[in-house]
Length: 371
Image (cartoon, rainbow, N blue to C red):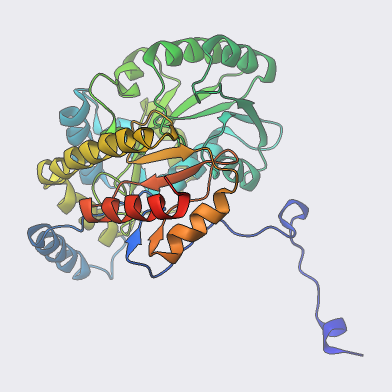
């Protein structure tokens, strides 16, 4: 008998058989423009403050951290008040290890067997995976040609599918499209009529990059207790390596998440890093302003080359349309520029980097695409 025959089989869930884990390419190239990171590392002053606070936290690592991270929640509420003008109690804020874990908490609490999660494609590729991992039925409606969500059509889909969770990225990933307040209000009204209740989650991972005049969904929280607005410190704060995501919602929503979260899920070190960074929010938001300018310039340049470009309120731009987008992607990579092959067929997405990054991207694209 062979060793393989002696090896016992694993009781893997049937829906996971043969699947590959999520992951964008992580390659060592000069210009990393594929996963929407902030290209600017924290300043020496920010690094020093983080290191100081982490050292203080390290002295108490023999004890469990504050299970409900009350100080961090207060700091996040204060930040959102400055950033969006919305007053929140700390009890209305929740945090986790990246907005990915925030989403998983939401699906654990409000999804599950016999329930449905709904979104509108193309959108963030992890949403159906959150649904799969929580045994939640997944339904994806369609966006319009310009990647907008048609409010009446979407409301009809909500009525027909009766989801317990609606996931709406705004700005949307990978398209960069923001959700107008009027559209969101229509969807919130439709969700309020779903039998048994429906939570509407607006994923504002790129919210700080929105253009002037684009409102945050935070403005609607007070009037809609079934609304959840999620954010992250990975993008605007340049803390992708720290893994800190958070949300604002009613206290009832937050209390439901406290039931499903693992004990002490947010380490003392993570809490210390996040609080130190929040003290430097004005400095970090100044970088956001320069990235907005670079994004808008990139959109203009791409259109001047005759390419189709989606409107973007994020720190990335979706552009195309190419007969062989993989060849374009590979050609850029061969020249040291890594972007993302994602979204509808023929489209590519470039994250906004430093001016040097964007010059390298433009030069490579002209050469590869023959613009």
